[in-house]
Length: 180
Image (cartoon, rainbow, N blue to C red; front, side, top):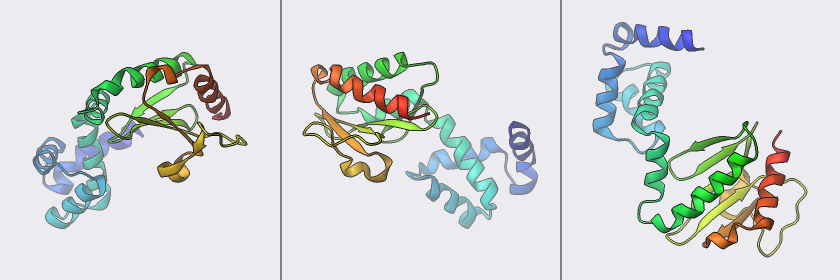
């Protein structure tokens, strides 16, 4: 896959009229919110094929938004929630070396073979922690997935570091164990 990508990047000036670096500058100036908006723009305004447009947008986003930047932006104005986030990340990383932390624009996916929890600063005072748990009953604390929809089966609302307790860690571990 890497070789195919590098070939595509090498062919970009000939096929699209600009180098990857030139396209990145154009996209950075536009600062599209969504991936699809950038692709649509390149196709409509510059006549770039879908394959090249998708690759250009993907590679420019990877460079412009490091994982730290994405997390930093999620917690802007919600800095009091960062200790909760950091403690959750510390715990999930202790579960095994096969855990991947994937920050996105509004949430952080925690993945083993597939996503098993999702961390989202929901308000200025609360993190919503989404779970993928099979055959686990809903409780007062372990609610149905709510706004997560089908991405998760359950949700726990966290607003205090004390809520990252043994019960919560057991649910996280259970979700991790099921994600093989």
